[in-house]
Image (cartoon, rainbow, N blue to C red; front, side):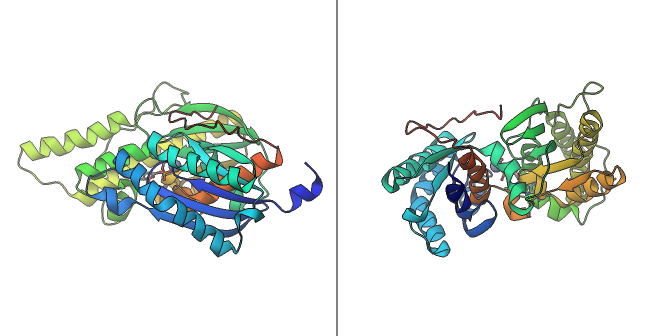
Length: 342
Ligand code: KG4
Ligand code: ZN
């Protein structure tokens, strides 16, 4: 790739792995020219969670208008693009296929390369959009609805998973507890909102730390402890305070995430922690890590909330770094629902 090809790189990033149809146009990895997100939250809310077939159909409806709006707002056409980057996994297979097929057709017609993006990698790359001067090695705490990973990020595209959840992801546990509390979907933001009115010390829910030194996570037992507390109260005819339960559970989840992150920092001696994924938008998690890491002289970096949850800008950002390496996908690119980070 020539220097001039690297100096004016325009990436269209497309995300359709779950319940957001999103597209963004990014210039040179830092200049976000447009960013459109069409969320299906209100459609899925009445079912208490994402219904896969409905999600695929919604993506089919919104894919083309969302992409067109992103190009229009950037005042560009397909001919101006350097490449099209699209999430190919992990995620819901039907949702992924809408994005992959659409991106393939557009890239083929426009005569530009196609870049296949790992959604987990993109969540981490969301940090590069607003912080370009990050120096490797980095540590990443990726906390989303489907994943909870501690990752040593050694160089662009080089990851070592130090720990991961053995059962529920942190976001999944928050969503399930929120549903039981009648707070609706997605649960994380609802728990955060109602926890403000509660006492985080009202209930002492367990903090699953696993074996000494383990960097793995387990949120399923913590979630069950909340459900058992609610069931026992119900059988005694008692009503518990929803804000207190929410605040205490949020505190327990944050405590575990923070303790494990501190352990990983101690082991790796890495000086910068990147927060990533939907749960990275959580205020208590950000504030607690900010304070604990400052005490240790470690820098904490996190994306703006809009770039924490699923979005096309993070796909375009990851796509930019793949583009610089000439790392393009074949026209046979397929959806890989269970794709891992490494
Ligand atoms: O990254 P994401 O948008 O989708 C996946 O890739 O899974 O993450 C969604 C998850 C959901 O579980 C949602 O409840 C959680 O992120 N979440 C939050 C907050 N905003 C989103 N959890 C806690 N606090 C928040 N403010
Ligand atoms: Zn995600």
